[in-house]
Structures are given as structure tokens and as C-alpha cells.
View 1 (cartoon, helix red, strand yellow):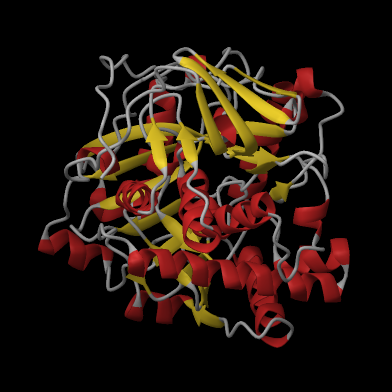
View 2 (cartoon, helix red, strand yellow):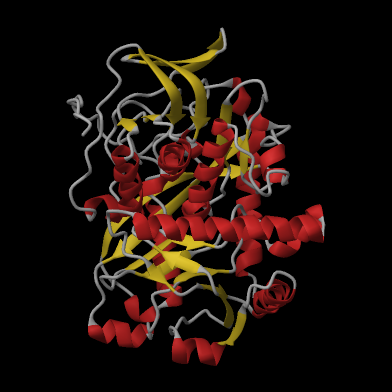
Length: 464
């Protein structure tokens, strides 16, 4: 049994943290005030912060879904006991701030867009990889010592305008006929009689693979599995810099330098700018806000027509993601502020409340018990990467999920472990493994472009 080391006092949660202007995510900061961390039960043990210079086989930077899953697979499949380094508390970033939606997806592109970008053959192989990843995710859920409250049955993609219903119906045909993923088209009447009574909905498609989870319990289950297999997990240990010399990596933390023969980077949108030049400008951090209501009464459940606890998203570009939780609360989230400095402005909370009221008018005035936000790592071409920049050096990064990382992060962690261990795997010739995250030509002006795009997206999404 690993003996825990006493962790120093927690630093306060910083609601204004912004990856594009901060030197790093801080050290030993407390969790964001999410529903998930408030309702996850006792936290599993960790190994305390790094307190001296250490020599290890593999160092994993980041203790979210990807980093912890990688530690699990390194131990289970390759006999390697990794050392996981976390700047703040375990799974402090988006792994405890998301909506808990596991979908059969990775990145932001549709299957039709995969075909347009890479051709049918590559798209079919990518679909096989992502689908295998969904099974990896489900496997870890089943094996986890912590029940993450899975809500299985698929993903309902709900059209909020007739033109969007036409578009997702056509995509459902592609999913069914080209990729063998039987996807149903559901009329507005069927949606209301069998699933939920959403006022905006004009129809939907039902994808067969989709699972809602309690993300904090999922992450802490990964943590316990990793430690039971011999990995160590060190919160309060931000990696300030990674240097490669003499065939080894040196990861400098405030408590000591970790010397490692291999490194996995799984820091998502919380990647410190100075961590490594390999990642500078390669992801765009995007804020996503979320709220959770008080539990619905029986009368409110009847008025909203909820007969399902499937994961739900709508067809806006700045999409809403939402579902009925096991305790009959509604969680709903969407994109919001551009900068961390503006993240707690009341208008962003009101945007979600207005969206909830449009979808479910019977919930006007319902109390909101939880409100939070977190940074999502969006790649500039909308697809993730699990990539080894230099074949001569055992450094691998897994980033860029674009908000679809809850399920695929399990597979990304497994692939990162295989690359670190030097093992080949089926599909390793796919673009998400063979090419780096692209950089942005006009990186200093990304937020100007983001602000303009948000205005255009909002106009287009809400046009009748």
C-alpha cells in the first residue's frame, strides 16, 4: 500500500484563471465549485506532492481522465508504474468540470466531414478507432472501484430548427449506411411522447452509443485503479519546465526535479505556456459554463415530459449539452465567456438559465444550485492528437478533444501508454497519431477571431 504524504494547505480556487494570460494553472488550488466535486463522496488517497529530486521510468503530466487512464494501462498492459504529476488537486481541470457525456466521438467533426477531409477508407478506420475507444471507456467504467453512476442507452441529438433536423437526418443516414452505426431519426411527436417534452425541438436523431457519467467519480475511480496497480499520483506538483538532456527528461517542480526516461503530457486546456515549446499555440482554450438545478418535483418532471436520462445535445454551433441526472436535477452547459477575467459576469449564467427556460418553460424560476465553468482544449483543425513529436525521444502528448473527451480520453490514455512502451497498435497510421496538433498562423489575434465567430454563430444558430 502506498503511504500518503501530507499535502500543504489548499490555495483558493481562482475563478478568473485564463490559460492564455496566466503563467500556469497554479499550485495546489482547490476545485471549482461543481456539482460533481460537491457530490462525489470521500476522495481517494494520493501520494502527496513531490518533495525531493526523484528518478522514475515514466512521468505523466496531468491527472485528468487521459493521464490517469494512461497510468492504468501502463501498469496493466506494460508493467510500467508511472508517476503522475498534477499542479493542483487530482482531476482539477475539465475532468471534474464537464457535463459527463460520453459519446462515440472524438473532436468536433462529423463522420461526413471525416470523409471530406481524408476520404472514405481513412474515415472508416477512424470510426473503428473511436468506437473501440468507446468500448475502452465502458470497460474502465465496469472495472472501476467507484460507481460513476452510468446512464446508458445512446445520445439524442436534438434539432432546434427545421434546417438542422434535415442536416442531422442526412448525417444519420451516413452513420447507418456507411459506418454501420444504426442511428434512428425521431420525429418531434415521437420525441415528446417517448423521451422528453422540449419546447424548441423539431426532431432528433438517436445514436446507439452514449453514456452519461458522474465525471468526478469516474476520474477518482481511475485514480484508485492506477494506485492499486502501483502508479503514484502527486497533486500540488506543477511541472514548471521539461528539459531533455543526456537521453532523459528533467521535469522541474517546486518540490524537486523528476528525472524520467519517458513523458506523457495530458494537460488539456490547462497546459502552462512554458511547459514545452512543442505545444505552444497548438490548442485554443475555450470556456464552457455549466449549471445544475435543484431536484425536479414530480409535477415538474411531468411538465417537462422527461422519460429519458440519455445524454442530450442540440444542434447549435455553440451547442447546449444537457441531461436529467440520477437525482432528477437538470444539468445544462454551453460555451460562454471569451476570457477568464469575464468568466463570472452574470450574463454568462443568465445565458444558460435562458436556454433552460426556452427548452423547458415549466422550469421558469427554478433554483440553480450549482454554477461553474472550465476550459476546453480545442485543436485548430477540430480533431485530437495522440502524438510523439520526435521518434528518438519518448515524449507523447494527448490533447485537443474539443469537448468530446469524456469517453475517448480512455482510449487516448491507452494509446499514449502503448506509444511510451514502444508497442504498435492497429490504426496507428491514422492522422490523429501521425501528425502534430496544428498551430494557428495568427495566434496573438485568436481571441479577436473567436469573438467575431461567436457573434456569427449566435446569429446563425438563432435565425428562424
